[in-house]
Each structure stands twice: as structure tokens, then as C-alpha cells.
Image 1: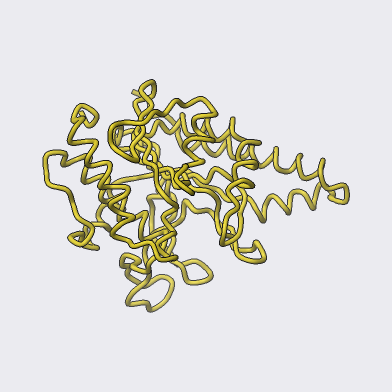
Image 2 (image 1 turned 45 degrees about the horizontal axis):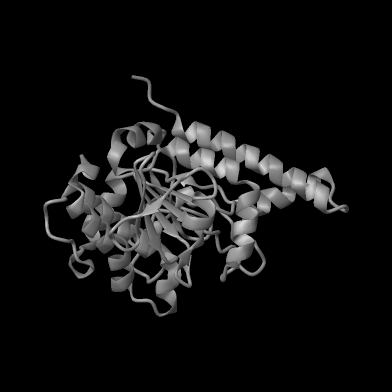
Length: 294
């Protein structure tokens, strides 16, 4: 059986989005030349999708990144019912919009025993924030899906080495519904407006990845705009289940988890509560619906 080229398709669609962004820039900014429009897209576009699964390396500013392995398509194909997708809003690109980068390179690690860029070891990033919560919730989700008859894996009992092992073994995906960078505080209305302009491309990408679980990081004031206003307005039909925070699209057999943005842990929301909101609610659904993990 020929392996589906998930990464290749995703890259092609993202190139189409970049072309649309450039054309829109030329149409709406009369002073923009073609060169300026290309520079604008280059500086603001944020590649995402299937996370890289290759070697660790240190980038020019000291972050640990991961290179593509070339095996991402095969690994994703093998996962089937363990495919996890995080749908987030936009990248925080800093005050001057100069902090954009390819988020597929995120390693969720920091360097230790650093000698130079060719000689270092890694450990899990434990700083409170988005990356830590992605890593820990991913570990909890994978454990729940692979151990449905075991007791709930509590946040406090998770070992960082086990999380690292999950990150190495299990590929996952992350897509921002807004393809260009933003600021530290997102305006959900503006994010949705921008996302809708290119929604056909984003929805194609999501459907091509065939995720089993989508974590929709868009809850604000008891409504998740990523889930209700974006996915359900663009070809999906997620419905409530009898477990709070868990929605299901029966046609595509996908669970969507209604979540706050995971970075809220930086603003007073506890890591324990965030983990329970995501993984705990999934666990409650799975133990009632074991057929979902077959």
C-alpha cells in the first residue's frame, strides 16, 4: 500500500495560501511592489502542520529545534487512530512581528550539558506555558487512547522522561487557523476574520491529515470560536456529547476537545486544571465509548 504524502500535500496548500496572501497584499496596499509583497509574506507567514521528527539542533538564537526526518508521512500513516491535531489561533510574533518561524521545528526541549552547537543534550522544557502544556496533554491523550482500561493518568504523576518518550515516538500536528503571525494577545474576531478568508485551504489541510482527536484551543466566554465558528461553519458537523467539553463529528469519526488556549497557564490558569479540562474530559468520554479506540 502506497503511503499518502501528507507533508507534501500540506506544503503545496501552504504555498497556495502564501500566493493568496501576496495577491491580497498587492490588491489592498497600493504602495506595495511585488518585491515588497513577497517580503511581507515571507516575514509574516508561519508554516505549520505535521511536527518534524528528525535530529535535534540548536538554532541561531539558542533554541532547540527538530529537523525533518523524511519519515513523517510513514509515521503519520502508521498512527491511524492515534492522530492528534492541535488547532490554535496564531503565532505570537512579538511586538515588531519579527519572531515568526516554522513551528514544525518546535522540539519542546531545552539544551543541557551544552558545549557547542554540535555537542549538547536535551531535556523537556518545564517552563510554564504553551509548549509544556502541549507536551503534557499530548502524553495524556496518547496514554488515554492506548490504555483505555487503565486509571486516569493524573498530571502530578507524569514523569518528564515519559513525556519525552511520547514526543519522540508519536508524531502529532499543530495548525494555526490564522496563517500569519500576531501579537501576545489575540483578537479573536480578527483571527476568525482572517481565518475565514483562507478557510478552504485550512479545511483541506485538516481533512487530509485525517486526525482522530482535535484540541480546539479557542474557548473564550464559554464559546469555542475555533470549533463552533470555524470548523462547524466550514464542512464539519461537531455535536455535543454527554461529556462536557467533548464534541464528535460522526461523519468523520473525530473527537474535538473544547479547550482554552493552552498558554492561559501563563495568566493564572493552573496547569493541573488545564490538563484535566483536556485529558480528563477525554478520559471520561473514552471509558463510556471504548469502541472509539478500536
